[in-house]
Amino acid sequence: MRECSGPSFISERKVHSMLALAVFVVTLGFVIWQPRGLGIGWSALGGAAVALLVGVVAWSDVIVVWDIVWDATFTFVALIIISLILDEAGFFAWAALHVTRWGNGRGHVLFPLIVLLGAIMAALFANDGAALLLTPIVIAILLRLEFSPSAALAFIIATGFVADTASLPLVISNLVNIVSANYFDISFTRYAAVMVPVNLVSVLATLIVLWVAFGRQIPRRYPVAELSLPESAIKDPLIFRAAFPVLLILLVSYFVTASMGVPIALLTGTAALALMIVAGRWWQGGRGALVSVPSALRGAPWQIVLFSVGMYLVVYGLGNAGLTDYGAMVLRWLALQGDFVATIGTGFLSAIVASVMNNLPSTLVGALAIERAQVPALTQELMVYANVIGNDLGPKFTPIGSLATLLWLHVLAAKGYRISWGHYMKIGLLITPPVLLATLVALALWLPVLGPGPVG
Image 1 (cartoon, rainbow, N blue to C red):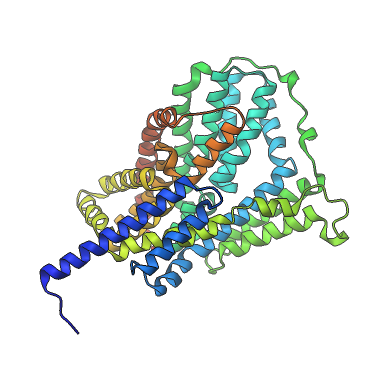
Image 2: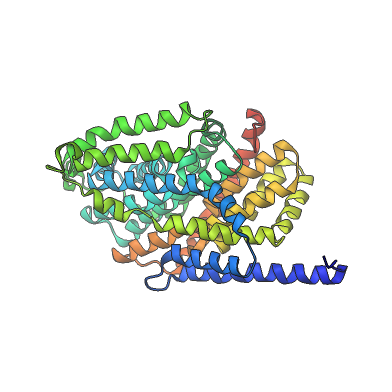
């Protein structure tokens, strides 16, 4: 075998790194552009194919990446199916109408109630479900109440932002959380113990910042008499009655099986199947069904399966080329500054990378760098959770930071609310940094009190 001289080896490594970076940049460009008919999944898968052809990744890496993403991806798909079925049955519209009535005609009470509803939806149905399902319902209510455009914009921005800033508490609350928990072998219970208190700080900080930014635009009073009764929103009473026990059993099962190694996708998929059986009235051959199960299945984000495998494989190529080693060097330097600085630094670094790169590939880049940084156990655990926070909240800096934001902006445009990328970034740069800082500080203070846990 030919031995490589020093300069030759360095040159080959540099070429390999540049090739991996070029494949990633082009792939990300196609994912954001989404040429007609191609979609995010096929764009990412095409990038992965190129990465395999040019040797940036090997076929053995496909198995490694699949092991990282399959549970997270299918959990996410199952959660969206559950959300779509409940949405078609009127579950979320019922909840929104109740919350609007609880405001009792006072706009300054309604605003935090809508934010809290969005936070609860993000925790249980993931950030994408909260943003994409709640936003149209909130818009419909605002139109019924004849809110001014500026007041309506305040509620719409609040709904979109809290979907991400409140997506920290549970493993299932964000695809980023699932990938990170699986990668570092963090149990559902341990993750919740760390992040539920941190998420409370994030929600409170979000509410305060949104209030400062939009408080003057919120009307003091609104006509409660114009609202429909919550019960009128229920389109399928059987699904509605089944929803509460199914969701409760699902949530309990996450905690009960946390130490058993049961895939989260299996539990979530079982709950989705149960709701599909009820929605489709399968026991009576579909007679009397009021919600279309095939429509929910078609609406599920199946492209995310292809995207996860393809995009993460391309990102894994960056690690193979040694580019994530630079991230590891930065993290080691941050660790030398103390755990507090390491936590804040890792979170903001992840947020910046996510806002430029998109948070899903950024999550794996951060995980690879943290794994290679070789820092003390407590510091590593702080960095793992800071990476999650940065990739959950950081995408709000720019529209391309997350696919959910791009889809959310598309939904708004279809409803007649167009927010330019420039306007969005002004809002994002105003709201995100203080919320991100407060959340990271909460993590840095809380985790050492809780005590270190196992991180794989």
